[in-house]
Every structure is written in C-alpha cells, then in structure tokens.
Image (cartoon, rainbow, N blue to C red; front, side, top):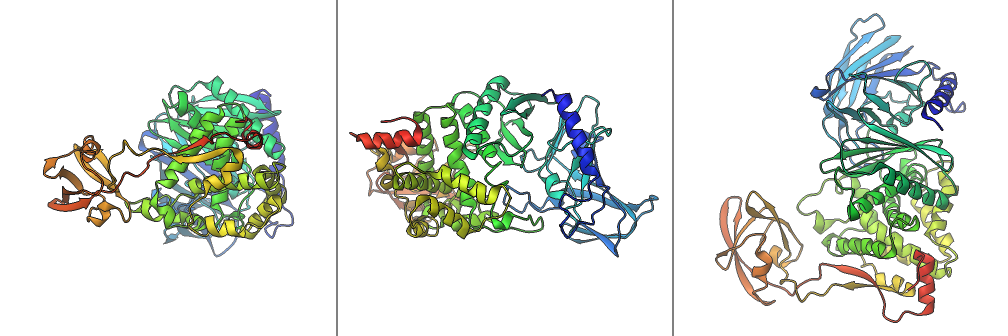
Length: 607
C-alpha cells in the first residue's frame, strides 16, 4: 500500500477513535472524557539535549491533580529513575495563571486544581539506548516511559501527542496513528499505548515493505554499512517464519526503528514496533547474522511478552518493580527461537546454528554463578542484578536469557523425544497464544508449567526442580543423544594452568577484571581491581601472561606481585590443571537412522 494512502486510512480510523468515549465501555473508567488530553513535544535547541514537554489536562475535577513519571519501561526490568532527567517543572491554569504545586516524591508532583491545567517541563536526553532518550542536531528519539507524565487512576484516558520539529526537513516516525488535519499529531488510546510507541524524529531513511498483506517499515537513523534491501529481504523471511509458527500476524502495521551507533547492541520490543541499536559497521559476515538474531528476538516478542505475558505484567505498575519467576520463558525461550527462526528462514545453515548454541553453552559453563543462582531466582532478581553487574556478578548469578535459552532447548528436545516428534516447543507457544495471548490474559507460573506438561504428556516436576528451582548442571547429552548430537569440552593441552582470574587492559596496566569463586586467585587473596605486576619477580603484562603461565606445571606455586589500592603486595598462588574454555555441540560418532530422523525433524537436516 502506498504510504500516503496508508496514512489517510489510519488518520480516518484515528478520527473515529477520537469520537469514542472509551474502547472498553464496561470499564470502571467508562466516564472518561471524549476529548483526549494532549502532550506537545518540541525541541527548539537540539544541541542542548532538552525536550520541551507540555501536558494539558482539560476539565479536571478534584481537590488537586497528581502526576507521576514512570520509573521503568516494560521490557527492561530495572528501575531507571527517569525522573532524574526532568527539570523546569511548571503548571498554569487556562488563563496562564501559575498554579501552586509541590513535588511529593522522586517521581510525583501534586498541583493545585483547575478546570484546565497546563504542565510544562523539560527532559534531558543524551543517552542513546533503546530504553532511554536521545536528542542532538540530527534527530530526537524518545520512549514514552522516559518522557510522559501520567495521572494515577486515569491511565485509560485517550491522549494525543503533537510533535514540533526544530527544522522543516525533520520527519516523524511512530506507529501511533496520525490525527486527521493536525500536522505531526498522533493519537494514543491510553497511556499504555503511549508508552509502547516510541518516536524517532529527524533526518532518517524510511523503507516501506509488505509482508503477508500487511504494511511494515524500516526506519534507519545514522550512517553505516547496512544494505537496506538485503536487510528487508531477510527481515521478511523472519517475519514469515514467525507468523507461520503462530498462525498469522497480530497487528495492522509494524515498524522497525534502527539506530546505527558507535558501539550499540540491543533491542526493545513494543506491541507494534521494536527499536534496535546496532554498531554502524556491524553488518558484514557473522556480525550481520547476529543482527538478524536480534531482529528475530525482538520480533518474536510481538507474541511472547507483548501479548503472552506473565500475570505480574498483565497490568503495568509504572511506580515500582513487577516480580515474576517466568522471565526465563519471556526472554530465554525467545532467545532460543531467535537462533531457530533464521535457520528455518534459510538465512543460515545448521553448522552456524550449532556454533551459536555452542557459544552459549560455553558462556554458561564458564560462569561460576550457575552453581549459586537458580533460574527462577534470576528472573526475580532481574531488578537488582542482571542490569547492574559488578565484580562478583559472574560468581553469584546467571542470566535468565542465557540459561533460559538452553533450558528451553532441552524442553524442546524432551517434548520431541516423548512424542516421537509429533509435538515440540512450537506447540507450547501456540497453546500459550491461544489460551493467554489472543485475549492478553496474564499467565501464572502454574499456568505455564501446566501448558508445557500438557504438550509433553509427562510430569516435568523433576525437570523444574533440577533446572528451574535448583542449580543442578544441565545434562545436555541426555537430551541431545536421541538427536545424534553431544556437547564436548575443547581439549586443554594447549591452555595455560588455571588461575581463576581474568585481566582487562587499559592505560598500560594489567588490572584484574574478575576472580572466580574458590579459584587459586581468590584463595591467594586477589581481588578485582588489583593490578598484576610480576610473576616470580619478573614483570608480566596482559599479552604475556598466558605464555608465562605455560612455563609452569599444574601444582606449582608462583609468587605474584600486585598493587592493591596503590600498595604493593606479594602472594603465592598454586596453579591448577587447565580448565576447558570452550564447549562444542557436535554430531556423535556413527549415529543411527533414528537419530538422523530426529535431527531432521528438529533442525531440517539429517546426520
């Protein structure tokens, strides 16, 4: 469909929506005003990194008006304290007379009542990530949670957003429908929709394409070596493969917002769009395939998380954390499919898929925290741990993305083996979609486990106890053997003796980056941040450490000289045998015909 015709139809639909009192007449807030409250976003001096926001509340009744700014954004489970970027708060009535107001908490303001209240404030925006805001002389990007105030109890109030670009050549990209006859003005049915609809404003490239008769857009800000047509072709294949899994596309239109930056690598899902941030020169060979994994991941969230979501996230509480033990399924299972989907779409082959799985097995098996933190606890602790790594993180935690992905793979294999490939994790996803996703009913932990068990046809309590609630090592080969594969640790004969510490380069020094729990380095009293100077009195650097260690046999004791907080100290460290730093997923020797058939059913090729 041509873009101008599409916008005309969307604008017409928007106008009709504006005339509705509420999209849920049976809702307790069915008396909401038919006239939307309005935000106006301007950026008169982009180089200051300040968005100017005006929020107008009409026909207000009450002793006062309370407004709040969210502290987190759905999809990124960390309290980010967006209010720290808000400044110059003011409020006036309909005649422009100042209204008294008071800040009553970190993200909450209370304003004197009036029939019409116009609030103005500024948001500092100089953090280019998918979950924050960024404004400079080339563009303005913002997320709703980091930008817009809300009125508690009136989250279902319709809203409009008017954008005032600083230059006439700045374009606006958003999935919100435009308001007919109002330039750069867009309609949101409620605050959740507004939060879920980021804006990209500025000088960017837009490519429209159609998949399964529905309009899609790729909007790119920044310069790099991305090839748009190739990317659209591969993205189309990913969309088609995921739609086939779930039985169609659940939206009217979809937009991919892509920021090309110096070192970005991340994404954030939204209901009808996603924002991606990727290295501007990262679109060649394996790095390009990694980008497509990111695309597959964020697009899979169109179903899993945005519509199939835990009960704790069924209604968003923007003031505080929302705890769920099921992020391993929300993010980990999505991570498993972001590897599978490009394979199914023909973007890469089985060899590359097995390499990616091997990489992730290696990451988990070389993380000591797998012995300490259960997967369900990792999900609950997302708010205080995953996004806030420290020197001890590798010793006391694991990622629910990483272990959740591998647990999901083992579940898929277990279901396939139990049902002779008549069912798989695909069936679980479709069942969750039918039961919970289509009507956006939040699922409980028990609901999820019951759905998986019903598809598998077996009691999985021992599986959950071992791998979800416990820290038992994942028995990869037990589940992989029926499919003719096994995990093999890489040989260690060429590796140096094990110390348990890693170094990080910087400023010409060899600083200790991490120390593994119960390792020789920890037993020797070495801490992250210490600076390694010498082994047995001879200077050593990060690029010579392994060669020096190879000069000693396991069991030998060496004297290390280090700085700790600017003071020199010496300590003896007893070297241990080399530890494997790589795990490879490979075919077993002499597979049977049955194993080859199972592998073909799983990955599309036999042995």
